[in-house]
Amino acid sequence: MQVSNSFSLERSRLDLRFRFTTLVSREWIGPDYVRVRVQGDDLRGFGEGSGHDDHIRIFFPDDAPETVEEMREAPSREFTPLSWGDDWLDLEFAVHGDEGVAGVWAANAPIGSLLGVGGPRGTVTVSGAPGGWLLAGDETAIPQIRRYAAAIPVGADARILVEVADAAHEVAIDAPVDVEYVLRDGAAPTTALIGRLDALTAGDRPAGDVFAFIAAEQAVVKPGRALAVDRWGLDPDRIVVKGYWKADETGASYHAAH
Image 1 (tube, rainbow, N blue to C red):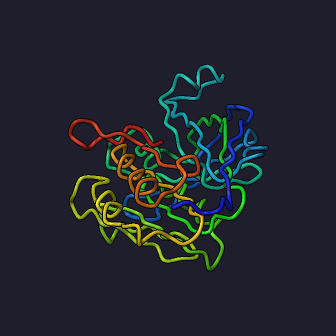
Image 2: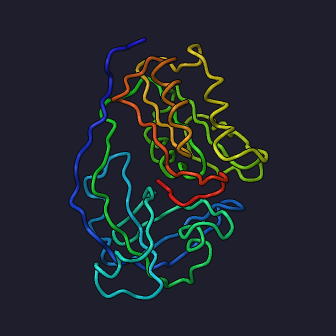
């Protein structure tokens, strides 16, 4: 089913910059979910030209590199910037014990630790007004779901699905509609979300010209596109379906965020 095009996805390039920042605060939002704030004069101008969807590369040096070249040699991951101001930037991390350099740093780095920030090098803007919305993801997608949810007008036909470990791990998300938490309850990551997406039929499609964002472990891509494109008839050029991380053979590795 194809409806009139009430919106488009506009992609634009941004000037790539690398910035040095310092960890100034940490807030635990859930048992395994933490928000940190980094600060620094280098962040002035961050976010100029940003739309609704962009990623940065963050660098986790062991010491204090003096040059961008030294900083870029440190371990790094891609993440969604959550919010920012004149000289600060907030980031959120899903923490999985001692797995993954990013989560370990977010949970344990001393206040005052250095964090390198590269980008964003590009951004996606939802231009116009989608008639309906689907936002779906696991914990790694929560920052991006927050940003899209902030763009949903009150009264819009929208559905938000977020997979978490169990009810105790639900992370509050400000949105004009209720968030449906999909609980793993011991199942492998992303399998519960995939099952929920597979259960949605053509009759569950929000009304109007729908924008869909679906992101979790790489395995979500095929069922996500099957729902959005095959069953709901959405334009594949006006949806975002992606793997934010990839499991190893055991299904236990959170080695990539986006």
